Length: 243
Image (cartoon, rainbow, N blue to C red; front, top):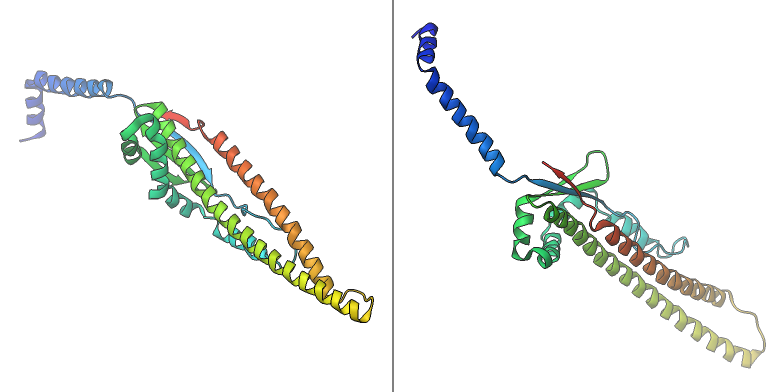
């Protein structure tokens, strides 16, 4: 059949063709009106590069902790995978369960999206849902779950550092006491003498450890305040945009 033949067929059945087109258009419009709008809530997070404990700057003593903490800070891709992990999702589900109940898992499974922002150290967490408040709550729950996980990890590292310093402090104190006892016995036998170089070093080491212990306690308090600030300012700040 030639092109003219096709045109003649369309002209003869133009009303049927028009009716089919209008029916398809009406179906599409009706479906779009019937389906509820979908909203997207998003928030951004970044890896904290600051170590949980910054000890006093004394070359050769305990700097390994700060170095390890910096090395353990996740990069952007690792941070994104951490947000997708079961641990973070489980924490977010537990937070959402208080408001949406058993639907928390479904909200995260169906509408969650985690993407690194190109050329930055940021990761965007997005959640889509027909309820804008629920979408925002889910995005915030994921961010807060990540903060909680990070807090537990940093507390563990801080505790390990504190235990190490306390062990060193106890050892130095024992060495100092032994040195003092030996000094007293020597003084009783030979009279007054000046402190030996080794004893002076031990005294200095003890003072340094005590100062670092105080510094550790202050910085643990600072860490808790920073995490509390992050949680307080992160909750309820997910941006909602219709898709």
